Length: 181
Image 1 (cartoon, one colour):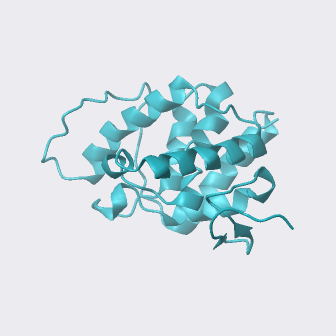
Image 2 (spheres, helix red, strand yellow; image 1 turned 180 degrees about the vertical axis):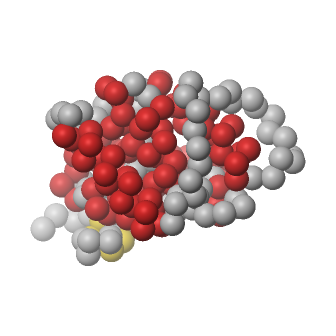
């Protein structure tokens, strides 16, 4: 057994996962779907519970079909590193490096590019506008207008167990049409 960097976390499926030393063979869809369904966006500062899983589900529909899996899994690192708010994340270069290591393990496990497509980043930014209107107070205004997604979006604010099911269903839909190959 080789030495690993850092400590491990126990995942939903009962595995050891080393966030500072991730390996593709230790990445499991059930761990990702469950953890993201349990994480609330905006560090919980919204009117109602809104999971990272639901957010990711929306992104998978806002991008072209060839990038749908990347859209669904774009925040999968948060299953292992947590959902850190954007302003704080900018101040944590070590976190960003660890998040990148986790993305590399996830992208390898699911056959995704090492760098997320620009289309996914654009959809993610545009969802902020929709989410702010639906889930946050109107004031204070954000300094950046992120624009709106190309397609209308309805925020459902699913309970965690529904968000997990919908995330998994979307993955298996994409798998059935060969997007995950």
